[in-house]
Length: 79
Image (cartoon, rainbow, N blue to C red; front, side):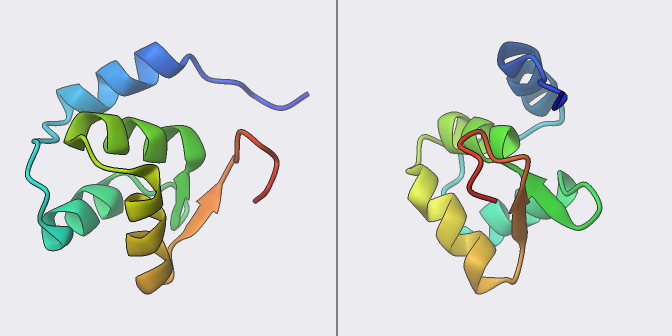
């Protein structure tokens, strides 16, 4: 069985880490890097970042791809 985290709790934890709503790519990348686990960004965390910054999930994916950051624990089983 895969470990499933509580999405609401995860988002609350991320908000408590101080993610703002700046949309600058450098700041998004800095936020992503703060939340990496073993060098990878968890899918649920990517969703939370996108929601908190009011940006498209595809933009998070693009920033990750451009910076060679892998996505882990994909909710769709893609990664």
